[in-house]
Length: 334
Image 1: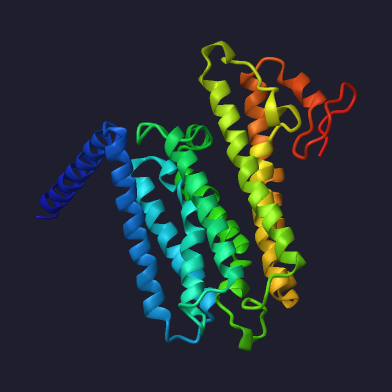
Image 2 (image 1 turned 90 degrees about the horizontal axis):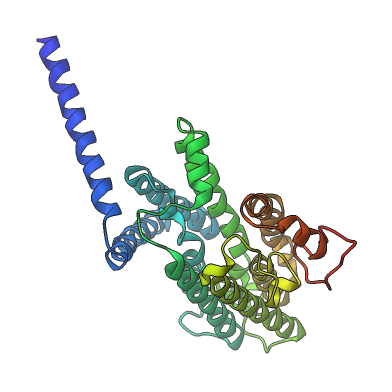
Protein backbone atom coordinates (compact mmCIF):
# COMPACT_ATOMS: atom_id res chain seq x y z
CA UNK A 1 0.00 0.00 0.00
CA UNK A 2 2.81 2.43 0.89
CA UNK A 3 4.69 1.62 -2.33
CA UNK A 4 1.53 2.22 -4.32
CA UNK A 5 0.92 5.59 -2.62
CA UNK A 6 4.54 6.59 -3.20
CA UNK A 7 4.26 5.62 -6.86
CA UNK A 8 1.02 7.56 -7.30
CA UNK A 9 2.50 10.59 -5.56
CA UNK A 10 5.59 10.54 -7.74
CA UNK A 11 3.47 10.13 -10.85
CA UNK A 12 1.31 13.08 -9.79
CA UNK A 13 4.37 15.30 -9.30
CA UNK A 14 5.86 14.22 -12.62
CA UNK A 15 2.62 15.13 -14.39
CA UNK A 16 2.54 18.50 -12.66
CA UNK A 17 6.14 19.24 -13.64
CA UNK A 18 5.39 18.18 -17.21
CA UNK A 19 2.41 20.53 -17.31
CA UNK A 20 4.50 23.41 -15.96
CA UNK A 21 7.20 22.72 -18.55
CA UNK A 22 4.61 22.75 -21.33
CA UNK A 23 3.19 25.99 -19.92
CA UNK A 24 6.63 27.62 -20.02
CA UNK A 25 7.17 26.52 -23.61
CA UNK A 26 3.78 27.87 -24.70
CA UNK A 27 4.31 31.19 -22.91
CA UNK A 28 7.66 31.67 -24.62
CA UNK A 29 5.97 31.14 -27.99
CA UNK A 30 3.46 33.95 -27.43
CA UNK A 31 3.52 36.89 -29.83
CA UNK A 32 4.62 40.18 -28.33
CA UNK A 33 1.06 41.49 -28.07
CA UNK A 34 -0.10 38.28 -26.40
CA UNK A 35 2.95 38.37 -24.12
CA UNK A 36 2.09 41.94 -23.09
CA UNK A 37 -1.47 40.83 -22.44
CA UNK A 38 -0.25 38.04 -20.17
CA UNK A 39 2.06 40.49 -18.37
CA UNK A 40 -0.88 42.87 -17.89
CA UNK A 41 -2.94 40.09 -16.31
CA UNK A 42 -0.09 39.31 -13.91
CA UNK A 43 0.11 42.92 -12.80
CA UNK A 44 -3.64 43.33 -12.50
CA UNK A 45 -3.72 40.31 -10.19
CA UNK A 46 -0.77 41.76 -8.27
CA UNK A 47 -2.66 45.05 -7.93
CA UNK A 48 -5.69 43.14 -6.69
CA UNK A 49 -3.55 41.43 -4.04
CA UNK A 50 -2.15 44.79 -2.93
CA UNK A 51 -5.65 46.29 -2.70
CA UNK A 52 -6.88 43.28 -0.72
CA UNK A 53 -4.03 43.67 1.76
CA UNK A 54 -4.78 47.37 2.26
CA UNK A 55 -8.45 46.55 2.89
CA UNK A 56 -7.61 43.82 5.39
CA UNK A 57 -5.23 46.09 7.29
CA UNK A 58 -7.09 49.41 7.08
CA UNK A 59 -8.52 49.06 10.60
CA UNK A 60 -5.30 47.74 12.09
CA UNK A 61 -3.02 49.87 14.31
CA UNK A 62 -0.39 49.91 11.56
CA UNK A 63 0.64 53.25 10.08
CA UNK A 64 -0.72 53.72 6.53
CA UNK A 65 2.85 53.88 5.20
CA UNK A 66 3.54 50.47 6.70
CA UNK A 67 0.29 49.13 5.26
CA UNK A 68 1.33 50.39 1.82
CA UNK A 69 4.71 48.74 2.27
CA UNK A 70 3.16 45.38 3.21
CA UNK A 71 0.85 45.60 0.18
CA UNK A 72 3.86 46.40 -2.01
CA UNK A 73 5.69 43.35 -0.67
CA UNK A 74 2.62 41.18 -1.23
CA UNK A 75 2.39 42.21 -4.89
CA UNK A 76 6.13 41.62 -5.31
CA UNK A 77 5.83 38.11 -3.86
CA UNK A 78 3.12 37.30 -6.40
CA UNK A 79 5.26 38.55 -9.30
CA UNK A 80 8.16 36.51 -7.89
CA UNK A 81 5.99 33.38 -7.80
CA UNK A 82 4.98 33.89 -11.43
CA UNK A 83 8.60 34.51 -12.45
CA UNK A 84 9.58 31.21 -10.84
CA UNK A 85 6.80 29.30 -12.57
CA UNK A 86 7.61 30.70 -16.02
CA UNK A 87 11.38 30.64 -15.33
CA UNK A 88 11.82 34.27 -16.32
CA UNK A 89 12.84 36.89 -13.75
CA UNK A 90 12.05 39.64 -16.26
CA UNK A 91 8.44 39.30 -15.11
CA UNK A 92 9.53 41.89 -12.56
CA UNK A 93 10.92 44.38 -15.11
CA UNK A 94 7.84 46.69 -15.35
CA UNK A 95 7.33 46.74 -11.57
CA UNK A 96 9.78 49.59 -10.99
CA UNK A 97 7.90 51.97 -13.28
CA UNK A 98 4.26 51.16 -12.47
CA UNK A 99 4.27 51.12 -8.65
CA UNK A 100 4.86 54.86 -7.95
CA UNK A 101 1.69 56.09 -9.66
CA UNK A 102 -0.41 53.61 -7.65
CA UNK A 103 1.25 54.81 -4.45
CA UNK A 104 0.36 58.37 -5.48
CA UNK A 105 -3.30 57.34 -5.77
CA UNK A 106 -3.22 55.39 -2.49
CA UNK A 107 -1.66 58.29 -0.56
CA UNK A 108 -4.02 60.79 -2.18
CA UNK A 109 -7.18 58.93 -1.17
CA UNK A 110 -5.95 58.99 2.45
CA UNK A 111 -5.93 62.80 2.45
CA UNK A 112 -8.86 64.27 4.45
CA UNK A 113 -9.42 66.70 1.56
CA UNK A 114 -9.71 63.92 -1.06
CA UNK A 115 -10.71 64.15 -3.93
CA UNK A 116 -9.59 67.79 -4.08
CA UNK A 117 -6.15 68.43 -5.54
CA UNK A 118 -3.89 71.40 -4.94
CA UNK A 119 -1.76 72.85 -7.74
CA UNK A 120 1.32 71.26 -6.18
CA UNK A 121 -0.36 67.85 -6.10
CA UNK A 122 -1.49 68.16 -9.72
CA UNK A 123 2.03 69.06 -10.84
CA UNK A 124 3.68 66.16 -8.99
CA UNK A 125 1.01 63.70 -10.13
CA UNK A 126 1.51 64.73 -13.76
CA UNK A 127 5.30 64.44 -13.41
CA UNK A 128 5.06 60.95 -11.89
CA UNK A 129 2.61 59.92 -14.61
CA UNK A 130 4.96 61.24 -17.33
CA UNK A 131 7.83 59.32 -15.77
CA UNK A 132 5.70 56.15 -15.58
CA UNK A 133 4.58 56.40 -19.21
CA UNK A 134 8.10 57.12 -20.45
CA UNK A 135 9.84 54.35 -18.52
CA UNK A 136 7.12 51.75 -19.12
CA UNK A 137 6.99 52.71 -22.79
CA UNK A 138 10.74 52.29 -23.05
CA UNK A 139 10.44 48.82 -21.53
CA UNK A 140 7.63 47.86 -23.94
CA UNK A 141 9.64 49.03 -26.96
CA UNK A 142 12.70 46.97 -25.99
CA UNK A 143 11.03 43.87 -24.51
CA UNK A 144 10.98 40.96 -26.94
CA UNK A 145 8.51 38.74 -25.09
CA UNK A 146 8.74 35.84 -22.67
CA UNK A 147 11.52 34.17 -24.62
CA UNK A 148 13.78 37.02 -23.48
CA UNK A 149 15.27 37.45 -20.00
CA UNK A 150 17.39 40.41 -18.94
CA UNK A 151 21.07 39.58 -19.45
CA UNK A 152 21.84 40.28 -15.79
CA UNK A 153 19.24 37.78 -14.59
CA UNK A 154 20.34 35.20 -17.15
CA UNK A 155 23.92 35.52 -15.89
CA UNK A 156 22.83 35.09 -12.27
CA UNK A 157 20.84 32.00 -13.29
CA UNK A 158 23.81 30.53 -15.16
CA UNK A 159 26.33 31.24 -12.40
CA UNK A 160 24.10 30.16 -9.49
CA UNK A 161 21.51 27.65 -10.75
CA UNK A 162 20.67 26.19 -7.31
CA UNK A 163 20.51 29.53 -5.51
CA UNK A 164 18.88 31.50 -8.29
CA UNK A 165 15.44 31.39 -6.66
CA UNK A 166 16.92 33.18 -3.63
CA UNK A 167 18.78 35.72 -5.79
CA UNK A 168 15.58 36.30 -7.74
CA UNK A 169 13.53 36.83 -4.58
CA UNK A 170 15.96 39.07 -2.71
CA UNK A 171 18.31 40.78 -5.15
CA UNK A 172 16.23 41.01 -8.32
CA UNK A 173 12.81 41.71 -6.83
CA UNK A 174 12.62 42.51 -3.11
CA UNK A 175 15.64 44.82 -3.00
CA UNK A 176 14.43 47.08 -5.86
CA UNK A 177 10.91 47.07 -4.39
CA UNK A 178 12.29 48.39 -1.10
CA UNK A 179 14.46 50.98 -2.88
CA UNK A 180 11.54 52.28 -4.96
CA UNK A 181 9.27 52.39 -1.91
CA UNK A 182 11.88 54.41 -0.04
CA UNK A 183 12.06 56.79 -3.00
CA UNK A 184 8.27 57.08 -3.00
CA UNK A 185 8.20 58.18 0.65
CA UNK A 186 8.60 61.70 -0.74
CA UNK A 187 5.07 61.37 -2.13
CA UNK A 188 3.58 60.91 1.34
CA UNK A 189 3.63 64.52 2.66
CA UNK A 190 2.65 65.81 -0.78
CA UNK A 191 -0.48 63.69 -1.21
CA UNK A 192 -1.54 62.10 2.09
CA UNK A 193 -1.33 65.00 4.53
CA UNK A 194 -3.56 68.06 4.58
CA UNK A 195 -2.84 71.62 5.69
CA UNK A 196 -4.43 70.89 9.09
CA UNK A 197 -1.90 68.10 9.60
CA UNK A 198 1.07 70.42 9.37
CA UNK A 199 1.97 70.37 5.69
CA UNK A 200 2.00 73.01 3.00
CA UNK A 201 0.57 70.68 0.35
CA UNK A 202 -2.31 73.08 -0.31
CA UNK A 203 -0.26 76.27 0.03
CA UNK A 204 0.87 78.29 -3.01
CA UNK A 205 4.00 77.09 -4.76
CA UNK A 206 7.33 78.26 -3.37
CA UNK A 207 10.84 78.46 -4.79
CA UNK A 208 11.54 74.90 -3.73
CA UNK A 209 8.64 73.70 -5.86
CA UNK A 210 9.94 75.51 -8.93
CA UNK A 211 13.36 73.95 -8.34
CA UNK A 212 11.67 70.55 -8.01
CA UNK A 213 9.82 71.07 -11.30
CA UNK A 214 13.06 71.94 -13.10
CA UNK A 215 14.95 68.94 -11.68
CA UNK A 216 12.15 66.39 -12.16
CA UNK A 217 11.08 67.48 -15.63
CA UNK A 218 14.72 67.81 -16.66
CA UNK A 219 15.38 64.28 -15.37
CA UNK A 220 12.49 62.81 -17.37
CA UNK A 221 13.66 64.65 -20.49
CA UNK A 222 17.26 63.51 -19.97
CA UNK A 223 16.18 59.86 -19.73
CA UNK A 224 13.91 60.23 -22.74
CA UNK A 225 16.53 61.66 -25.09
CA UNK A 226 19.33 59.43 -23.79
CA UNK A 227 17.24 56.31 -24.47
CA UNK A 228 16.24 57.53 -27.93
CA UNK A 229 19.87 58.15 -28.83
CA UNK A 230 21.12 54.77 -27.59
CA UNK A 231 18.26 52.89 -29.30
CA UNK A 232 18.91 54.60 -32.64
CA UNK A 233 22.61 53.85 -32.32
CA UNK A 234 21.97 50.19 -31.49
CA UNK A 235 19.56 49.72 -34.43
CA UNK A 236 22.29 50.59 -36.92
CA UNK A 237 24.02 47.33 -37.85
CA UNK A 238 27.23 49.24 -38.57
CA UNK A 239 27.46 50.12 -34.87
CA UNK A 240 27.52 46.53 -33.62
CA UNK A 241 30.25 46.20 -31.01
CA UNK A 242 30.92 49.94 -31.08
CA UNK A 243 30.50 52.53 -28.32
CA UNK A 244 28.12 55.46 -28.66
CA UNK A 245 29.97 58.75 -28.17
CA UNK A 246 27.49 61.25 -29.60
CA UNK A 247 24.70 63.37 -28.18
CA UNK A 248 24.26 63.10 -24.42
CA UNK A 249 26.57 60.10 -24.42
CA UNK A 250 29.42 62.37 -25.43
CA UNK A 251 29.31 64.00 -22.00
CA UNK A 252 28.32 61.09 -19.77
CA UNK A 253 28.69 57.32 -20.02
CA UNK A 254 25.32 56.83 -18.31
CA UNK A 255 23.07 59.85 -18.96
CA UNK A 256 19.95 57.67 -18.68
CA UNK A 257 20.96 56.58 -15.18
CA UNK A 258 21.70 60.19 -14.27
CA UNK A 259 18.16 61.10 -15.32
CA UNK A 260 16.69 58.30 -13.22
CA UNK A 261 18.67 59.35 -10.14
CA UNK A 262 17.73 63.01 -10.62
CA UNK A 263 14.02 62.14 -10.84
CA UNK A 264 13.99 60.77 -7.29
CA UNK A 265 15.92 63.77 -5.98
CA UNK A 266 13.34 65.99 -7.66
CA UNK A 267 10.51 64.26 -5.79
CA UNK A 268 12.39 64.74 -2.54
CA UNK A 269 12.73 68.47 -3.22
CA UNK A 270 8.93 68.66 -3.54
CA UNK A 271 8.50 66.80 -0.23
CA UNK A 272 10.98 69.04 1.57
CA UNK A 273 9.26 72.14 0.16
CA UNK A 274 5.93 70.81 1.40
CA UNK A 275 7.22 70.29 4.94
CA UNK A 276 10.92 70.50 5.93
CA UNK A 277 10.25 68.22 8.93
CA UNK A 278 10.23 65.36 6.43
CA UNK A 279 13.91 65.98 5.68
CA UNK A 280 14.69 62.37 6.70
CA UNK A 281 13.00 61.15 3.53
CA UNK A 282 16.29 62.01 1.84
CA UNK A 283 17.13 58.37 2.62
CA UNK A 284 15.13 57.42 -0.48
CA UNK A 285 17.16 59.29 -3.11
CA UNK A 286 20.39 58.44 -1.26
CA UNK A 287 19.57 54.73 -1.50
CA UNK A 288 18.68 55.19 -5.16
CA UNK A 289 22.04 56.88 -5.81
CA UNK A 290 23.85 54.08 -3.97
CA UNK A 291 22.01 51.45 -6.05
CA UNK A 292 23.17 52.95 -9.33
CA UNK A 293 26.71 53.81 -8.24
CA UNK A 294 27.27 50.54 -6.39
CA UNK A 295 25.46 47.98 -8.57
CA UNK A 296 23.84 49.11 -11.81
CA UNK A 297 26.69 51.19 -13.25
CA UNK A 298 29.51 48.75 -12.32
CA UNK A 299 27.59 45.85 -13.91
CA UNK A 300 26.97 47.83 -17.10
CA UNK A 301 30.59 49.00 -17.23
CA UNK A 302 31.86 45.43 -16.97
CA UNK A 303 29.51 44.23 -19.70
CA UNK A 304 30.46 47.09 -22.02
CA UNK A 305 34.17 46.37 -21.53
CA UNK A 306 33.52 42.79 -22.63
CA UNK A 307 31.33 43.64 -25.63
CA UNK A 308 32.34 47.04 -27.01
CA UNK A 309 35.49 48.05 -28.85
CA UNK A 310 37.62 50.73 -27.22
CA UNK A 311 35.25 51.13 -24.28
CA UNK A 312 38.26 51.48 -22.00
CA UNK A 313 39.29 54.56 -24.00
CA UNK A 314 35.75 55.91 -23.67
CA UNK A 315 36.03 55.43 -19.90
CA UNK A 316 39.21 57.50 -19.79
CA UNK A 317 37.79 60.39 -21.79
CA UNK A 318 34.16 60.57 -20.65
CA UNK A 319 32.60 61.17 -17.25
CA UNK A 320 30.96 58.18 -15.61
CA UNK A 321 27.78 59.94 -14.55
CA UNK A 322 27.75 63.73 -14.28
CA UNK A 323 28.34 65.53 -17.59
CA UNK A 324 31.79 67.07 -17.95
CA UNK A 325 33.76 68.08 -21.04
CA UNK A 326 35.69 65.23 -22.63
CA UNK A 327 39.18 64.70 -21.25
CA UNK A 328 42.21 62.85 -22.55
CA UNK A 329 43.93 62.75 -19.20
CA UNK A 330 41.19 62.16 -16.63
CA UNK A 331 39.29 58.93 -16.20
CA UNK A 332 36.21 57.75 -14.32
CA UNK A 333 35.05 61.22 -13.43
CA UNK A 334 32.01 61.34 -11.17
